[in-house]
Image (cartoon, rainbow, N blue to C red; front, side):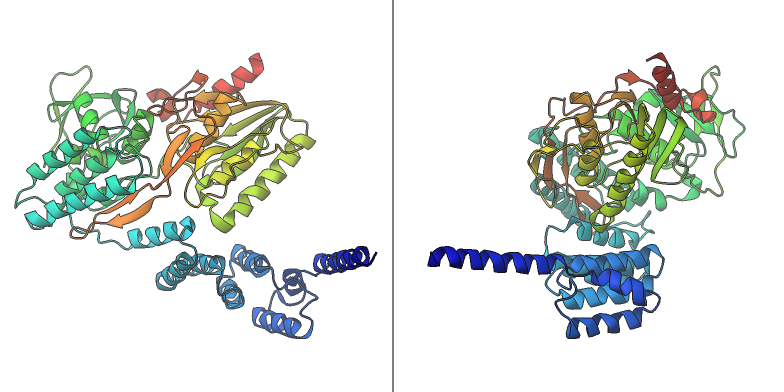
Length: 560
């Protein structure tokens, strides 16, 4: 009896304590209600309450101040947000998240020094904080030297840097020889070293580096977009025509200062056939496996600078066009302003996340940039999805179009969260997820208000990394009808890239470190997820900005 009474007493105390904990008031709500417009007063109020009524509010929950800080950031009150996040760091000095949030706030304030200091502190407390790593990488990359086009380093410095690059690539990436044999990889390294002379310029060297990183065939391993090479290219050396590659044909989309017609097909440049030029350029464009649609998108974004590198920077250009045998001499550019990257026509305009309706039965959910929702920003993605599907279901929408064109990836929890609205049964998102992923290796339950109508995914070659994982589930589990071109990714990738800088030449490059494989892994790792209906723009469609993928989808819905 005595033992039973003790057990009952302990259990009662536990219930009482739990109830007390559950009934604690939100310190964030208290501050917002009383002092949101006076942050200095809010901090004093916080300290006063903690001293006088420490058990009345949930001071132990660091998310309270963190969420308050982000609310202030969303209201563009950056200085006030920093004050709250500094208080958060003082309250939780051994937690990595406050310093990560502070880093983001200082970055928004354009204080790179303090942003890096806080991101580094966050990494010290949590070495797997990929968000902090990524932020530091972006800050360092932004401040790089952009004026080294004609610089010449010592031959041995180039050779040492090539050795360093090859060593880092093969020792950091866990699958360096998955897509290219070890013998072939090192053969190319020696070929590049044999091309180095005492007169080799930085511009030539970085072109060699881009081929070595591309040979890993990992979308997270490479020099990034063509920014480093393009930004230092003199305007007079640029290829003086805007072009677009469609399948194997190169078309003029803007003649710039040259008297030529749009949609004209170019057959040769400086006597070299287009097929040979593209073949060489593709050896320098990073993609997952051997997916060419990804390479084509990069080429189309930077064609005015890729072509000069491939042709070794000619002082003048001639082109041979279809229907005319005699080459045409092109004028050199005196000025050039790169055009914004072209995105498929969509209903979102400039928004990353958008829900719109074509008619009463058809909704369009556009997810352009899920890469924007790492770390604390995932809550933005989550809230948008929750509200969108609540609205979709309340309107009894029968057809849902999910447009992920131009979405190059992002944190895995965005894809997993969206899939929970599409799956009708429990599923495992990944069977292997290394690094700092927070996706559990267990069954994920579909949401009760999941979508029960017909779903259609619109894809293009830009989609890789997490977008590849998302579409691997969609394709294998037949969650939707897929329309577009071959995706730029699949079920496999090596993510968690880390930025490196070569010791002598300071070439920046990233290397993927962590293997990620979805539970849906029946696909060819060399190819992207294939659509159920292959639809791409012709040159006429492109110039008219005609969204043939969306138009095809609407016709498909009408037929079904």
